[in-house]
Image 1 (cartoon, rainbow, N blue to C red):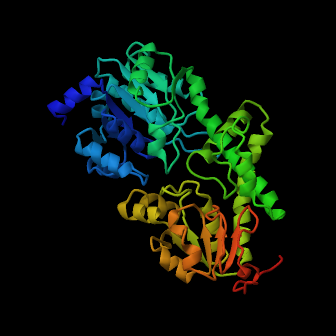
Image 2 (spheres, helix red, strand yellow):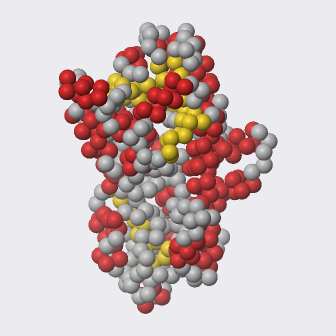
Image 3 (cartoon, rainbow, N blue to C red):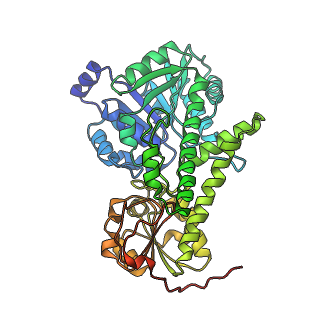
Length: 472
């Protein structure tokens, strides 16, 4: 319940009432950040667990800064959650759709959750007289906005751009830095055919830095796919350069550091660092969707089509390096697809871990964020359903993993891994993230895509195998 002081504060700042349909990564971050800006936010989700977490002042995800923001917003009375879409719509003027859009087996998007949210919003609008704005924040292909508008018209009995508007407002968030990305985006993009909605969103985002761009709806819909496919291409390009450099014992990070100094033509240094395969909920799904779209349009895209196979080769390369050490006990340091998150969706190290397990290796896995999400329930269902064979191998005890394992596989640049060469000498370290710039390590070190950086003589000592090696 808002106090009189809160109402006056929000009125002076022209704050808004917002509902957020979906409380996953994008929804939780959006809800917390908008509430932090002073808006009143009502989250809606079909998951009772997520709704309960928000109503307890707890986030539904593991993400830097998000816990503090959710608690602060909850304590101020600016953030709540419900499973009742009617209540969420009736108490808001803008409804964000931020539900999942998973890939089908063929590479198309499953938009069932989007369309169901649209139907629920439409039914709620039957009982509402004021103009309502629906913003699609989920990543969807061009044409989805129109379909959402059609569904809302059918279920509400109201007319688009007379009683309601549908805008496309794609997000450009990176997991691990999502809060800062929300508050400091490169730009804010709105696809709309409604002047009323454009004006409202300019007001909503007026305190967010970066250019506000209002464009055609389908232009806004395709931008996230263009961005994420390019990010995937950058990662693959850097990895292939790294593999060439490693074959010639050249430090690929020095090469790419120089490459990235050209800010006029090479644009941006982000992602241009050789390392492990990319993963996460966006890059694999979005590049696949763009390839499928091109296929459906009979457009040949050989470079884009080559991104995923090259990414898969990087997983294979990591597996080969680990196996080459000839040791049975493998410690995987980091299971999520990047540091600072518990997100396991398309995490590339999972494929490597499953392959090692199938070949008889003994695995121990350290990931404090995934372990926390197991205990709090935010990610437990996914882990138990999708990774039952890895479930019991995950721990938040880094020392236990490093002490008992013979090969330590570093998958991300977590600060907890900085001291591993000093604390655990004589191990074999496989570095997939370029955790160290240079080393004087009393053990065997190998990076996935760069030349030898270990100056210690122990690097040249032959490892004694505990796993048989065959040539067939």
